[in-house]
Amino acid sequence: MSLKDRDYFNVKLERQDDESLWLKCKACSELIFKKRVRENNNICPKCGEYFFLTARERIESLIDDKSFTDISKSIIADDPLNFIDSKPYLKRIEEAQANTELADALILGSATINGKGVIIAAMEFRFVGGSMGSVMGEQICHGMEEALRLNRPFILISSSGGARMQEGVFSLFQMAKTSAVRAKLSENKILFISIMTYPTTGGVAASIASLGDVIIAEKGALIGFAGRRVIQNTTGEELPDDFQTDAFALSHGSVDRVVSRENLRDELSKLLSFFLEAE
Amino acid sequence: MKDEMTLAALREQINELRRLNANGEIDLSSEILLLEEKLRRLTAASYAKLADWDRVKLSRHPQRPYALDYIPEIFGNFYELHGDRIYGDDRAMIVGLAKLKQRTVMIVAQQKGRTPEEKKERFFGMSRPQGYRKALRVMKLAERFSFPVITLIDTPGAYPGIESEELNISGAIANNLQEMSQLKVPTIAIVIGEGGSGGALAIGVADRIMMLENATYSVISPEGCAAILWRDNGMISEAARALGLTASRLKELGLIDEIIPESLGGAHTDLQETAANLKEVLIRHLSYLSSLSNDELLKERYARYRFIGRYRILPKE
Image (cartoon, rainbow over all chains, first blue to last red; front, side):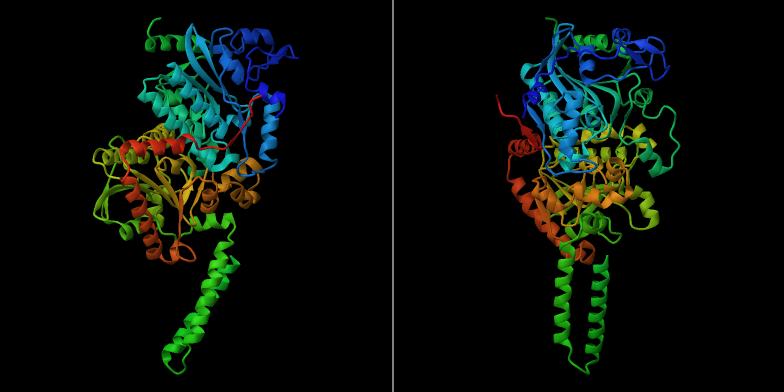
């Protein structure tokens, strides 16, 4: 392992200098000064479209300034199946690491939200589709155990296509693993808040993300088990316009609330205050 | 398969000799014995070298025994229960009480359906949220009365449909995973055919996970995997190999406890023999699991799931 690898486990949230100053909104095509977008919670000031958030940006948008400490374990993906599709699995991992400067598809740390201590984890969709393999499963469990040990709420922000195919049944069983450890939080009255964003699907939706004591969907989230194409091919059903949207999840009772991005942090803080004794 | 035709021809030949032999004009019994031995040998060899994709096809074989074929062979007095008490009764998921060596057990099983009508009624074995909730309901019932839970897994996956999403299939599966990890009775899960991803796992969290010899268990179907990772339907066989979905591979990887042998040529060739193997394994494991206290049982189960996964640990500097 090179020294660079180690940096992946000491994630700093400070943004690297961006080379470009302008962003183009994919909805209204407006060119906007990047700094203005950042200051506006990564929401287009012109049309209100949400820009995609990296895991770093996501966590930064929710916690108190400079309160983040990386608490992840120093682990990286293995290749138990010697999986090769268009490229070898570990090559794919190395490329994702280089692109995201993360060890795998999850950032895990301790932080404060309005002064309240939490364990917080966010999935990185740019890292192999935010897929959950052995590393993410272990980090989530480690995060929950730290929440238990420190008696702090656990907050997980999902952005994932589901289980990581390249680790086969090891990935599938991470669903059971995270769910089993999650049960320990219930037993010990540790609050677990699950935030579903675009997208929360497949094996992640069908395990840890759906097990929050409180489940919040970010406005614009995609929430569902099976993909649209799979459903259409299997059933031939015409899918409703709002299918698997935040509104769909709310109206069918799958989530507690839908919250817009600019209000997420305040909502979290408010929610935490119901569960935490005043200090 | 080419082998299958050779074997069929050989079987035909043996039957022909038997008929001649029965006429009593010449004694062909030694020839018949020789051919039968050859048939056995060729069958064993042919099935041992099956490609993983062939194994998938075998696990989906139209004549493959389903849960409702095994249940009367293994258990006494199966008494089916119905409904999730909320929404409906999923016919792809069968649950009920039964006796195994005089002991009451709860059976939770997936069922595909044999005739076109039955397949439709049972959604080809694809469970919906009401099925997973029904399963959980009776598992909690079993827990209250200390009945062991035995699950028989055989599904292409959870049913992907609008209704499934409306009824929160993700939540139903997730809830089963969490609750099964804590169920205070011995639990055994056996993949008897297709172990299709989360839809299989949702009744598969148990103290023992076992597979019939030709069953498969996978994070995604080879077809789905080929479409997503290769974007090429011609790569299905390669995807099947890459996914490591056979019983023998999963045993090597330490993900399942035991492989249950099937009759030669696959479970469909001899239901009784395969069922007898299943029964022996169930009794053996249940007898051990029942000897544990609840604390020990749950501790062992927790340890099993807590440590599932393969990753590299970076050395300390």
